[in-house]
Length: 125
Ligand code: HEM
Image (cartoon, rainbow, N blue to C red; front, top):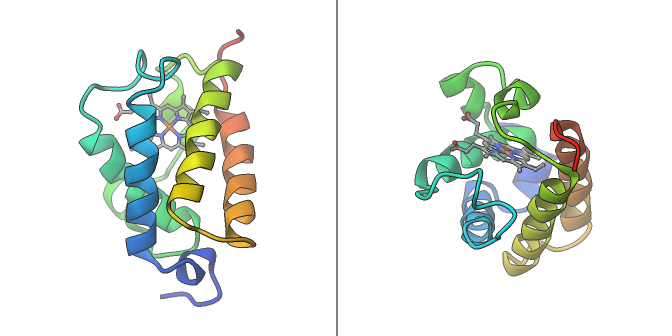
């Protein structure tokens, strides 16, 4: 277990759990996103909990189960346009607020996810 990480500072797995739940509730209702996501988001959310735990400095749960993250490659089957990137980030921004993750962590998390989301785009508008 690492200390001095965003993961620790925001309250560990319970907070990631809440964030991911609040995030996918929004994704499941967003008209730009529902066409590319499965109807049942249970498994998607479960993997995202593992990934974000690891991404913010917690235990390497995602890699233990799924191997190297290769996030861009894993997203290639899905057409991710600038509009979908914006929609994803909009859902995340609202979920961070709803989950009561406070600054400076809220901003730090959002900035890191924005960079990753930019990297995930693979389709022009
Ligand atoms: C999986 C869309 C950005 C992390 C997926 C899936 C879709 C998707 C459609 C497949 C869901 C499934 O079949 O269960 C998007 C869109 C994004 C985006 C539209 C907008 C830019 C991101 C970002 C991250 C991320 C920024 C991480 C910081 C993941 C993870 C999975 C996933 C961990 C599960 C991968 C696996 O199967 O192991 N995403 N994504 N995504 N996404 Fe994204």
